[in-house]
Image (tube, rainbow, N blue to C red; front, top):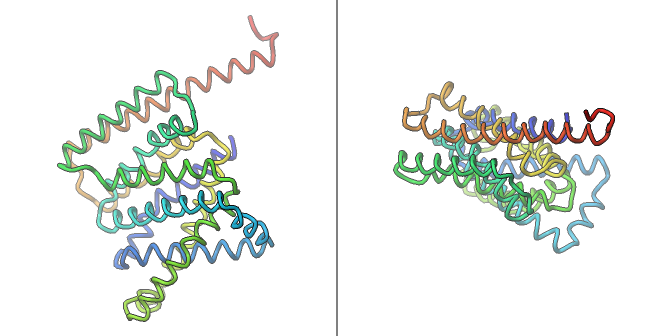
Length: 303
C-alpha cells in the first residue's frame, strides 16, 4: 500500500479518538486548550528540528515572502479548525462535529476541482449532489445551519488545499505554522497567569500532563497528514477522511450518548450513501486503470 495512504489512515485514527482526550480536560476553557496545543506542539517540533540540526532550512524558508504568506494562511485555518472542534466536543456536539468531517471529503474534492483543476468523472458528481441534499435535510431538522459541521469542513478542506501547494516538507511546514501561532498563544497564557485565572499548574498534575500531551496528540497526526497531502491526490485524501468521523460518531452515540434522533439518522444515511457511492466509483475506476496499465506494460496478455 502507498506510504501516503498509510500516513493518512494513521492521522485520521488519532483524530477519530481525540474526543476522549478532550473530554478529560473539558473544564479547561477552549482558548486555553487551543493555546496549549499551539505552545506544546511548537516546543516539540522545535526540539525535533534542533535534534536534526535543520534550523538553517527553517530560517531560509522564513526569508521567502511567498512561503510566509502560504503558511500564515495555513496557521490561521488550523487555529480556527482546532478552536471550533474543541468547542464542539466539550459542549457535547461530537456527533455534529463528526458530520463536518463526513462532509469534508466532498468539500476537498470540490476544492481540488476548483483550484487544482482535478477533474471529476461524471459519476463522481452524483454523490457530491446527494451529500448536498443531506446537508439541506439536516439543516431543516436542526432548525438552523449545522454551523459547527460546516465550519470544520470548510477550514480543514482549505487547510488541506494550502498544504497541497505549500513548498515545505511536513515537518518544516508544521513547525512554521505553529511558530506563527506560538507568540500570540504564549502571550495569552502568560496574561492569564498574571490575572491568576490560568489552568496549567493550578488544577493537579493529571491535568498538567493532559495539557502537555497536546504536543504529541497534535503534532503526530498533523505530520502524518502533511506527508500524505503532499504524496497522494487531494481527492484520495478526502476519500480516506471518513475514518475519523466514523470513530467520532461512534464515540458520540455509544460512549457519550449524545441525542441522536431518527430524523437525524436519515440525514446521516443520505451523506453516508453519497460517500459510499463516491468510494465505489473510485475503486471501480482504480481497478479499471490498473488492468489497463498491466495490459499496456504486457501486450502479450491482451487477448
